[in-house]
Length: 155
Image 1 (cartoon, rainbow, N blue to C red):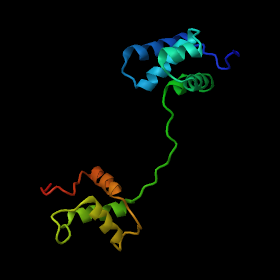
Image 2 (tube, rainbow, N blue to C red):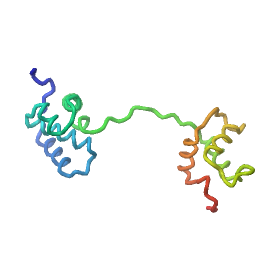
Image 3 (cartoon, one colour):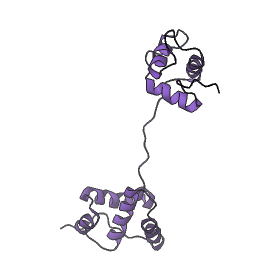
Image 4 (cartoon, rainbow, N blue to C red):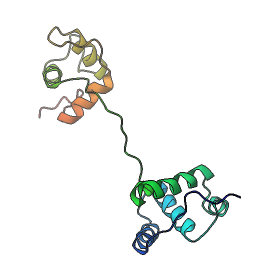
């Protein structure tokens, strides 16, 4: 078997930190597993032994080793931050229109607003320049304001 490209040599403080993480048991399972991988690799265990002991795949072990050597301890044990950018569906003016809509009376023949009904009405409004909006977006906006379409009590 070829020599390992990414050898783990933990400093004393890093090893103690990882031991504290694994002994506390309050971290997420993936973080605990990654910490255990590093500890076992530091003790000289082979990838095969680590794989059998921790029930993880070889690529996971190799990825943890690589991240530790190239990026450091934090990158090796913590989850990678998402780089996805979420675009806002509604701006402040459109959210204000939605809130005004919800605070007004429900449509004729209805006892209260539904999320889907609000989404349809918001798209139909001339003041709002959106082509489509999902009921889930409406729900999220209302959740931020503590408004509920089904709430018949004032306040």
